[in-house]
Length: 120
Image 1 (spheres, rainbow, N blue to C red):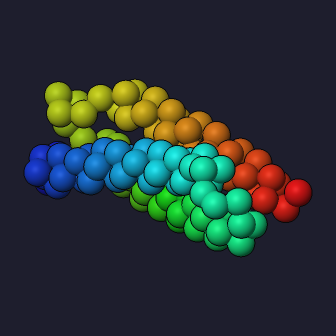
Image 2 (cartoon, rainbow, N blue to C red):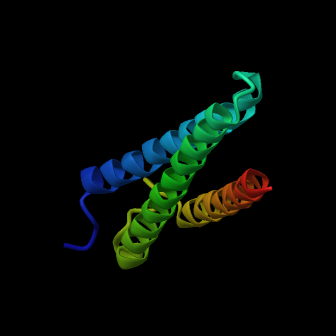
């Protein structure tokens, strides 16, 4: 078979894009939770619990995102020669992967700053 099955390619791309949307939602929720911790009772324990939960949610989202990118990139590299270019432009996919990696690196920076602010 010269070309990869089109439905498999479109399904894999749809899962990748859907997972990226989930990552954006997770990061938004965790950052909102960190920001809203200032509005909670001034009890130190309550603020600490909310920040820790938000940091853990963000960490899970980052791990989930990197796993998604690695899986999709391996799939594309494995089938690069058999992908029908009319369905998927490889240069667009590579640019999209690079943008997602940059986004996740920025989320890692936010995570590290949040952990630093939690400690101090």
